[in-house]
Image (cartoon, rainbow, N blue to C red; front, side, top):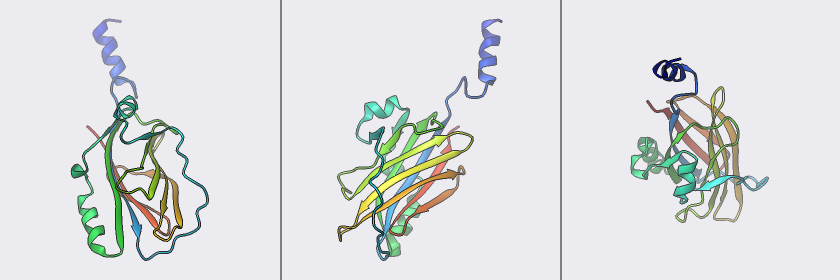
Length: 175
């Protein structure tokens, strides 16, 4: 096979020839008026990459984006003005070639929200999934857990929640 023909052939094979890239925008928030449930277990942080570890993120195909570039700025403004919800953290990133099973996860442990800890992972098998494993310590000392793996449709806003803790997330495929 000629080199040009082989190159074209490789581009036509699914999963070969180009990287699948996705943009993830999310907001973690709490409901000020909902009561916390007792925590069941601490979040699983196995393999989670600290958001400040740029070298490990790059090796995993993850690029964090500035908070100002969030694709959910309208939803963030609504949460802030609601009086009921308190945004805890916004995060946006681009991820190339997400794995089908527990691949790289982002660890959410930021200095500005020390009561929030856990991980979020984007997975791609037959469908896109977002795996969220978070804990939030309330001002009263109770800990709330949000642990969910959800099938995600691209370009749609998704809401994952527990009684006290919630996540708004949107995943977009890059062209």
